[in-house]
Image (cartoon, rainbow, N blue to C red; front, side, top):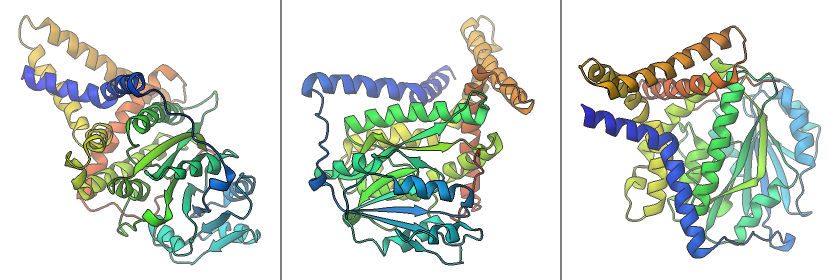
Length: 391
């Protein structure tokens, strides 16, 4: 039991902290041997033609701001096209977009889900690069230039931008936890990219070469992740570009954030089952290592190992002279009590930020368990499951 407990605890630690530490050490070694790569040039003549695609569903609250943000983005004249697709929207989203002749609007009343809308939009794309961004996110002015400059490197097949979560001083657990999570994720993506490749892109802001775009199955939940990983599986790198960022508000509350996380977890299991070839380290040695370490462990066994570790620790701590196990049990109990206290404080709208991290950590791992159950129970749909964001 002790051996199983130690292995379980090691995997949990490796998943959430150890991989980041090991990855950073590898980066330091790589820099010492090869030096840092020089920054990529931003020659306007070398930038590819680009189409910016925004898929929106009932986003009338954000749409005017999104359009104004989009129209101020910097890119060489004549090289950028704007395409918004609003399939299924029943509010004023299509009407707002239709006021702007600079934007090509695709709309039909039927709602088939985001990926169906993206596939339909791709039929209208004839540029070298495509950038995808969400309707409720706002880009920095040079985001498109910072992203598309990477396509001068023929080994690059996709580029992932950075997601930033807007947090105010009175942030609740959903905002503070999500913000902390994405800061850590951004660091991992930066190091992943420097080692070899980012492991998937987030839909808030990412780009692909048009020639490498491969349609995914219509029931795909994490379309952004699958689209980018299919390109990586062809031998191309996904580069991380932190100077291109999309800012959005946090989920309205923890319940809304949990809904989003469960959907991601269900999509994660689906993606793992459809990307089985990435488990073979021979054609993709570094990518397989990054994929398993950064994604697979987090989306599969780690939440179960947390439960197993607690059970084994309880059993071992009941034996006499097991002071180490008793101390370990006390540490686990204290952590989960802090998470429970975070839940209580959240319900009472008392903001004690030190409690947000254990609370959000438990919410994340619960979401993985719920997502696995939802996926295998065939209750997960690819149709938009709109999460309410803070206004």
